[in-house]
Image (cartoon, rainbow, N blue to C red):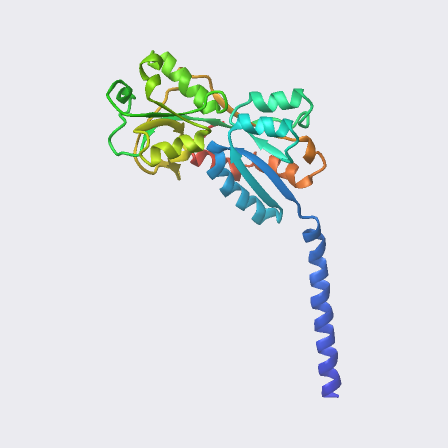
Length: 258
């Protein structure tokens, strides 16, 4: 009898385990990938947010970072992205008008902050007067492709320094490359996104000047669902998640506002 009882208990336990495992299958089966084109300035926040989203939902976020202008060209040529997190508000609007993105899904997920930064401590002063001193190179993102580059040029125009400094420009393809020029010492200083040098609400190294908003147009960064993802539930869920308090707290910790 003990032997029969043991076998029966083992069988019941096995059935329970199999039933539990099967109960988990629907969730796994419905997990989806979300291919996200992310403006270079928002790479670090999105990596953190992507990991948080994956943990909560089981969906996988696949991140590609680069210049917004290049993403526009790629999407226009059929690149299989689900979501665009742009560095401006004009590119998502343009994609929506051209019928390449889902109407009504666009919103501003962050407002970026331009900063003049050097990897050297005590090099950039709190008013940006270092721009009037001798230095070798000034790193700026390509203004035709990167909104932060356009904002940098607007700032120099307002300061009446464009003609004086243009011979010292080192142009990055995107804001990520622009940051690397400064971080590696190939440029003494450069205009980058505050998010690239800020960790947990503080600039992690070097010296900086936060460019006053009056010097350039607001860097409104919009997100939009692309046509490929019109029926992708995970992509739609990601757009909702980016508006949650949890997500916004992370975004603010990198120096963005709303």
